[in-house]
Each structure stands twice: as structure tokens, then as C-alpha cells.
Length: 432
Image 1 (tube, rainbow, N blue to C red):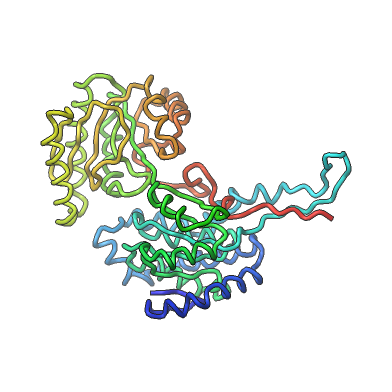
Image 2: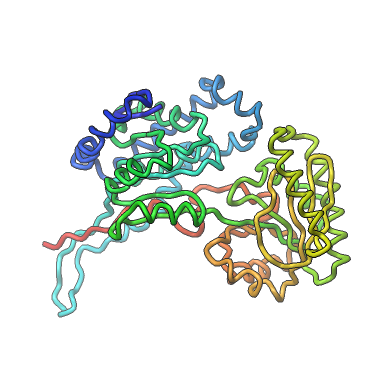
């Protein structure tokens, strides 16, 4: 489906929409409101939408997704809370409010003469969003941020999208029709390079969610003048000391089961503060029991996913004589014991690794992962939390939290160490 000018169209009408899209974008840019006005409109509309979700008006769409385990009720409630007006207001004030309040009008130029300069925050103009499909509703979230910054937004849906994002965006423009010109949603295959390049050329910036390959692919679409704003796939992990409590490990196991390790802030594995293989193995066996117990409260993965993971685990077992890795299997879960200190993606879907990483080696082991680090969940004594946090921050991590809260967010939180609304805007100076 296509969303254009507030109306839904079938994919067969894509050519007609593409013919009209550039003129529509130019018209919207010409008549756009200020960033502050746009933010107010978006916050008000999102507040209405979140109230309707709480009231159950969209249960016919949301309940099947909950039943299938696409996301948990806890994840849904946290996502809906993010779009409540007070939380969006914190986001806006955190990211742009400080800039807007501190714009001097009289400054001295390099010759010492006083000059009157009006500075203001303006949108980049047109954003082309290429969203990833690893988080339900992410395309909607990306467009909302673009609109809050005053931009016109063209969204390419991910191939695995099930219609939630386009439904939510349609509701937003129904709530406030003035927002209709600021969003267009297209269901274009990434393989259709002709259309992808055409959309990229329309935009002032391309917003791409994905890993290095996705970003590299976008670079082939855009010319050298194109700004690319990437929110890449990141790696997150837990760091535990041997004396970590079962309660902390249970919270970590629940996080793994809730996120299924599919998000950038999902725990892929556990580093243990030790050099001893025996300690690593002991932690792996201990965590496997906890993970297996916690997983009983969650739906089983599909046959296809279970088969894919089983093949991966079997291959690791075949290669174990040369790699030294050890697979600990449980019911629907597994833990891989490895004595290297390489941060890597797990097999996901409640299958993690456990490795040694003594604290004195943290920076050395992680520094070469620059640009790919995100969240570390710490399970350690309280009197060591500040010191260990400092080591991970020096290594390049952008978010340090408790292991059970790795996927939780707070109002005003940054994306991978940056504020998106600032990246979607520019400072304009007018001298008089």
C-alpha cells in the first residue's frame, strides 16, 4: 500500500504517485511551518493516537501481533508511552530547546564590529527514510522524528513490514490533516534501483537504518552532495562479575527473551570479568538454567527459526575441535562458551555466548569495534559501577545500564550517542 497526501493507494498506482511526488514535496517545503509549530502539531496528534491505542481502538491490528510474539505487551506499552505528549515534549526540549533558547542576535565579526544576526533552526527539507525491519513500528518512529523537525518525509517500507507503520501514519494525518503533505509512504523493493535513486535524488538527506552493507548500498544511490544520516546496526552485550546475583541474571534472561536479541540494544552475549576458563564455563552453565527457566513464560520460536538455529549450533559443534567452543543446549535456548574476547553477533532468538573479558582488557578488546558499540548491561557490585562504566565509555559504548534495562529507554534519550532532531535540522543565520 501507498500513503500519499493523506490517502491510501494500491501499489499499482505507484507510477502515478511518483509523477506527482516531487511537485508535492516542493509545495510542502514552500508552505512549511516553523520547526516549533510542526513539533507542536506532531506532539498533539501523537497524544491523541496514544490515547486511542490505550482505549483499545486498534486492538484488531495490535492483538494478533502480540499473539504471534512480534512484540510483548511490555514493549508495546513502553513504545506507546514514548509517543505521549509529555515524553515527546522532553525529547523536543532536550534536543532542540537548548539551541533555540541560546541564539544570540548581536555578535562581533572578526573585525570587531557589532553585527545584528538572527539565528534560527530550520529543517533540512526533504528526508528519504530507508527503514529496517528488525523492530516493529520503527518506520513510523523514524518519520515522526523527521516531522517533529519540520521535514517532508518519504518513507520506503522494509520488505518485512506488516502494515503497522503505514496504519499509524495514516491515523496521524487523519487526526491532523495539516500533516498530510509531510509524509509519503511507498512500498518499493530495494532492488528497484531506478526508483530508489530517484527518491534519493529528491531528498536533502537519506536516513538509513541498517548495517554497513545497507549504508554502502545507499552511497551507490546518492551523489556526492547527498547527506546520509545513518542509524546503523549496533552490538550490545552484558558484562558480569562472577559474584553477580541470580536476580540480576534473571532480569538479563528476561530481556533476552523479550527482545529475542533482534534490537540494537539487545544483549548478544555475556562477557565475564575473568581470565579463567572454569569461571566462564561455570557462568555459562548457571545462566543456561536461568535462561531456560525464564523462557518457559514466552512463546516458542517458529519451526523455521528453530531449524535455522539448530543448523548453526550443529555446525559449531562440528567445528568445536578446531575452535574450542562448547555448546550448552537447553529447551529452546542455548549458551555458547568461547574463550576469545571478540564481540560478535549471536545466533539470536534466545541463544547467546559467554566469553572472558578481564576489566584490564576492556578497552583493548572493544576499541576496534568503534562505530558498532551501543549498550552494555552491567551486573557488578555498586561500588564498581562507576569505574566499569568509565572503561566502557572510553572504549566507545554510548549507553551503560543495568542488564535487565538494556532495551528500556527514557524520554529525551539519544540514538547511538546523537540527537536525531539536531541531525534533521540546520542553523540558519540572517544578517541585517
